[in-house]
Structure formats: structure tokens, C-alpha cells
Image: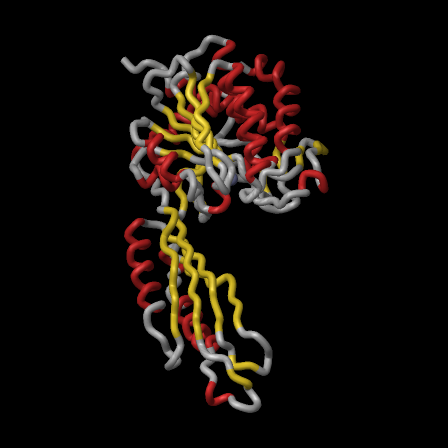
Length: 380
Ligand SMILES: [Zn+2]
């Protein structure tokens, strides 16, 4: 397999360059659909059938199966969107320097898209079972919460034996075996505006009310339990000499168990239902939107298989838990063994310094091929 991938490696880098140089931020439908188009054509060449799920305001989602697929056992999830605005690819296009590749989305996760395609191509061209044992969901809105594609992913996961999610490996090469869940809330406060010099008594300060709520919300964090509530954004007021008529906060929540999520949701809703400053009105929206991915027995077995295949390639694959959410959380919550971080190794994602370790691009592709091969071996 190594020889085969060595031979294809220039083509892999070429396709990566092509994809990185297409801006495909989550709100850029045109760009995401363009990425989808490139992939669609490629997959069709290999005999895959593509179902394009048309989405009006976001990029289309793709579901891909080989024409020989009967009842694929493995679900593979990867996203086509990035966090970068239009113009980024022009500003800092794909480059390679000192063994690292750069460019918007290079590690999160355009290299994973390329890795996946070439893995399946390798299986097909070497006549190895596995290529027909997968169903692939390429979605368009992972970076903004997977609203348009969550159901698609969950439906696809329903009858699968396992799920492999192609977020990048951690900087030290670890795959991801557990993830914290996430929640998002918005709290809007309405008060009453008034001139702070002439007529302050007739005003009701939304900012003052929000200040109380911020203190209460922040106090919900329990770091020792891996539970975090962060009021990360606030705004309010109209001018310095006006009693603030409105204010709002956005709140990020991280949980490590499903139960924790239920309890914290109740607590936040309680805070959002009771005012401290008389006359203000609260409007709380949001909820837990990504369940945690717990490290259970099914995940452990899958991790062992990946580690074993890694060992055969001389790779010591570690696994780790992370605070960030991903689409892995959805399938893990359905109790389908899910491992994430199956993409190449790199780091600094979501920043201009995002990079891919070029060597790992090759290594992780070979590993991925072998994992698919192992998982598709007939069990006797
Ligand atoms: Zn990602």
C-alpha cells in the first residue's frame, strides 16, 4: 500500500491544493457547492453514487455509497466547510514549506477529504474489500453547529457498526476517543432607556440586570467536574449617558456527561426566568446542541483496532479526550461506536497559522486504508 500511495502522492497534493484554494466558509454556499462538485466528479469516476441533499441557504450535503454497496457497515463523516471568509484563499493560498502545508482549511479538513478519496481509490484499484462497505456523509455546516445535516448523519449512523469521523488528529498525532458536549444560549434583556443626567429615575438598566445574570451564569462552572459555563460575548446600551434599554449575552457551555447536560440546562433556564432588577424582561433561548462523546466499550474496541493497525505501520497511535465538539458527538450519543481525529496530523486550525504535516498526510492515508480493510474483513 505504501508504494501505491507514494505513486499517488503528487496527485493527492494536487487535489489538496485545488480544494484549499476554493473558499468554502460555512456561509459561502457557492464555495461549498464548488468543493462538493469537485468531489462528486471524482467519486463518480470510481463508481460511487452520490445523493446531493439540496440546502437553500447553506452548501448542499452529499451522501456517497459505492454502486456495489449492499449494506455498508461503516459510516464516514467529514465536512466541506471552513471557518474562513471569502477572499482568504486568495490572500494566503495553498503553500508547502519545510514539511508543512498551509492554507485555509488545509487541516480542518480539506486534507481529510483528499485522504478519504485516495484511500477508497487505493482499495478499489487494488481490489481490496472495504470501498463498498462505507457510507460517506460530507456535510456543509459542521463549523456552525451542523443544523442542516445532523439528521442526515444520524439517519446514516442508525444501522452502522461504527463511525469514523475525519476531524484532524491532534498535534501529537492522537486520535480522539472522547469529546465534551456543548451548549449555546443567548440571553436578551429588555430595560427602559432614559437620559442618565436629566431623568435617570424613569429608566431601567438592562445592563445592570445582565450583570447579575453574568455573575450567576459564570458561577455554574464546575471545573473539577469538567463542566464549564462561559459568558463569552456581551453587548448593550446605546450611549454612555443613557440608561441602557437593552443588553444581551452569549453563553457557551461544555459538558462531559449526558446527565450533566440535563442538569445545567435546567439551571440556566432557571436563571433566565427570574429577574433581579424590577421591570426588566428576560428572553433566554438555546440549549445543549452537541451531546458528549463518552469513552465506552465500543469505542475502546475501535481504538484498539486502530492502534493495532498503526503499530503494523510503526505508528504509536495515542488517543485522547478533547473539549471541542464535533459531529462525532451525534453518532456517539446514539451508541454507535465512534472515533474521531482520523484525519492527518496538523494544528492551529481556525487560525491563519493552520498547518498540515505533509508526512502525516501519507501515513494517515495508509493507516486509514488498513483500518477500512480490517473493519471490512469477513468475521468467522
Ligand atoms: Zn473540522
